[in-house]
Image (cartoon, rainbow, N blue to C red; front, top):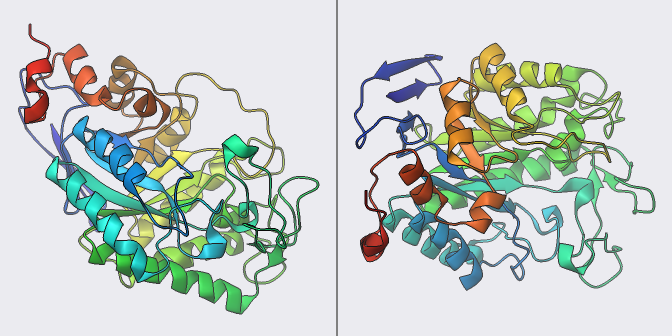
Length: 378
């Protein structure tokens, strides 16, 4: 069955579709605006910490290209910084200058050649910027040190004890971030990106604004729920000014802070309804990242949040978090908990997971011609 979603009409049409020998949910196509996904498997953004001055290289080409060969319907890049100061680390991808575009376009073109769609996750790390690579300890690098810089946030509140305080963004600083997101969206469209995702999760800048744990402002960007979500909604509006209306726009949020006094799933449902009203097409539903918290990790531990947002806000959702096998992914979709399956670590372990999952579910899908001799035969 194909689901065709029109955010302006705010409901879903259904038409019959026969795909392969059976018709599983995981391998049924879906159309979101002009985004035609051949299945429901999305390569979730995964930081690779392998860029220099924001420039993509052959690591990114091979890493992302392998997942396209493996059969995913959509690949979304790691958090790609809209400004140098918006990077998590000095090795993050960037899209803050035109010079970044040539290699990114090469990657997009290769991914498209495999029949896979491509998206950018536009991001600003806020107070969680200026950190070292994880395999080098991942600690914050002081602003005065090599590879370090001054961080910014909604309030001068550090993420963890011992880290440098971020500088509170003033109105001019907020406007600069909005312009940076806008310019990044123009560049992404110029080189053929199919979808944009605004990173509003995991304790990065947008999340820092909407969570009361990190936002202690008293102006129109702080205090009430409406004020704290203002910056994210303004970012959506800024991107929409330049991003083609026929192209899909996603937003990733953290549905809960997992911390008393923090952001909650009830807040997320309210935010998702506002995002839907703005014309956002899908909420990529993650959790946590804005405070040190005890998270009850288990298979699919975040799916329930995607389900609530989907059902109560009436918007498409993506489920993510310890989804590791075909049967689990199929159950999430067949039970109506989410519309897309965002996968990360399992696709690091096995770039060809979609090919294997189709075999396990009894689906017949097209393999790359170069790999057909390895296709499972019944």
